[in-house]
Image (cartoon, rainbow, N blue to C red):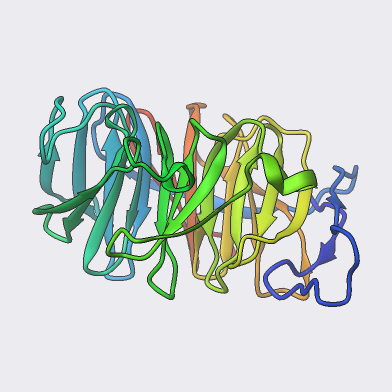
Length: 297
């Protein structure tokens, strides 16, 4: 389903604007769907909360039901797990999000108010927790998402203070944005976050997607009218979803345009948690498994 388009957010500049740029997207009656057909499923989870596919081709999944982190390859081969309930190193209390680079894996350990860092083989490296810091600007609690940008900065979605925290990979605080002082870009109920290759931060805030640049300046508020559950960016593809529908946008396009994905050959209707598009493949996480689809030319 094609939506009204707006200037490409990944390259949009505010240099010549005196005010904020508000992008309102409405659903149209015109249908334009890219079709993907179901191939196979893998994994067996209790209550999967998030997943990420790194550039080396490995899939990392967090499971809030078991408080564990799992590693698979894209063919569905189980490789390793880590975690279990707790508050010590390598344990979790509601791991709600995971982000993986080629070498490292970052987990938002929600109820422990921290981000845990593992190597690609799920060996614990370090943790970042600032809730008890004397500097209120860097404090975060109940983190719902974390991502590392192409410049190596760590972005954390701080649900307790309704803002984004930015630090370097050594845990040194750089800035926060999206808080009460952000005006039209203040976050009210942020739930998911993704960082694009050009280091724009996309945040689901109720039914809106709020976009910030690398310096925390607001770029756009995209009003979708949808009950959004997931948000992922791999390469230039942004994928977002409701419980039953998947949408994507190519951030390299001249205009930002969300398009609905048509799914075929799946004989049941699971509830979607989040999804990742990579070239001709679409990976959809449900609470119980990962569904793999291939695009139809």
